[in-house]
Figure 1: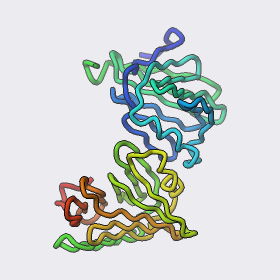
Figure 2: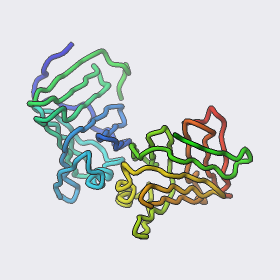
Figure 3: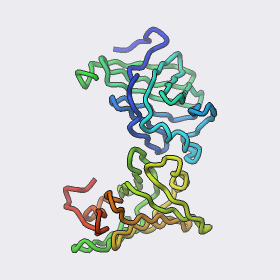
Length: 138
Length: 136
């Protein structure tokens, strides 16, 4: 099953904590519900102090501020077009957007109906749904 | 190619040419993954000394202290050795990471595609090797 849901699409991760941040050629953030967000291209982080910075997955030292999100609690998150935003209880804001050169970010959540979302070049957003793999969530 | 030696009594172990640092995992621990399947998990403070001789303390609990490790991404692990509860990683270019024992926690753990995993445990700082089934 696939299709574009009503916009903005609310992420089912409010109340989750950031459990793990993995740095490889890309950046993966895993949440306590099992949801995950992977960035292949630039992202933006506004820290709890209000400082806004652009981070590149290929520039590991630039990602230091992102590590502060570990154990932070998600207030809310949404997708609108090719843009994803996640707000945290600390006041931090994480943002990703589409990229003309290639896939930019991928989001997956194992909620009521599992959804995998890929943002492709030229801003195409692909949603894929399947029956939940976890049955009951929170 | 990974070459490793292990002392069956739980003492010294050396791994050479374990590949490049291609994974840095951050949760309550700090995980380092290398191209050849070698893995290092750090749970306590360690020190990173760069090629200029500058030393910094890295604490997995303080995320703002992890910059020296981020700078090692992509570096090749030339040699890893464990002895008397101390883990030493030597990277190409001369950067080193040293993790000693911790009074309260299992300070570090290493595992790889060959040989048995090793860890250091409080309170003695003794280095132990696990069974094949412990391999991470």
